[in-house]
Image: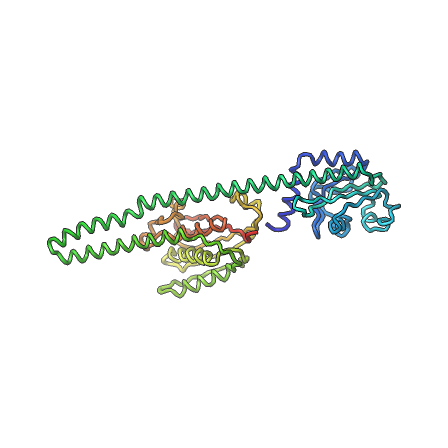
Length: 413
């Protein structure tokens, strides 16, 4: 999540506190001041989270003041309240630039600290007229209110983390159930097919051996060997798929990964001439080997399913996307900055009826069977994307190419 997103979240969290508007009204009524606000204060920003303005000061929620023009800037550093009954009679602030800029005579601002001790901002009030503020009753009220704000912000944070944990558990459970579904289907169907052939050819082999038909014995032995190899490759694919759990996240330059993958594919025997157009992709925190596997399978698929009468063209572009847009697609998204990577090819495309299952293990399209594909590449891709807490989807029409959409976190923190 970028810095502006954090600040927007902080403003929204303050707005969720039900007693805030009443709190600001009590401040104005008790002190006689016309403007009261809760401000989010950072090293370079002063932003209104909630406000009551009876003097037409002109700030609304989300409004900002230049940080260097505020006294809150000094409060953040000193971590102490500032209270001014009458600016013109105050020995410290009578010549201060802030009252001159904003034209107030009375001022009170008390720091808000989160439960971890971090400075959040201030509860402040101003008025163009002097006011009696520097007394135990007023100071006590402000400190009580800042403690209440801190308590509610902490409660909202805990609730958000709990909700995020529940969503994450549900995500993992859904993915686990999906993989279990695939494993059950594989054990009941995919693995049974080569075993059935081995049993059938073995029975025929026994019969051929009994009548000493050596030519038939050789042919059947070859078929048994082919079926055994297929079974062995499927077991290896399953083992590799299950082993995609490395979490050694590092800074990964996806542009370099894609360039290396393209060079590798271009060097393979009978490699097709491919036109690859790649826009600049941000460096992300990821598992390097898995990112290499991801783009190898995606680009290899585009090449494998290219049209016979035209050279493969692959366009890859990326953009940073706002968190609110991500949350609609990934409800578990929290605290990260995300990118969307779109990969479009000009290949033969995929029938709409086939799109739902293309990411399943050993799921083969009719074109896979012609090209002797094993149906594992896209299942690896989805597993890798899930490992990175992202999503991958495909859109396609027969004869019009395929578009792959990938959404990934940029960082892990």
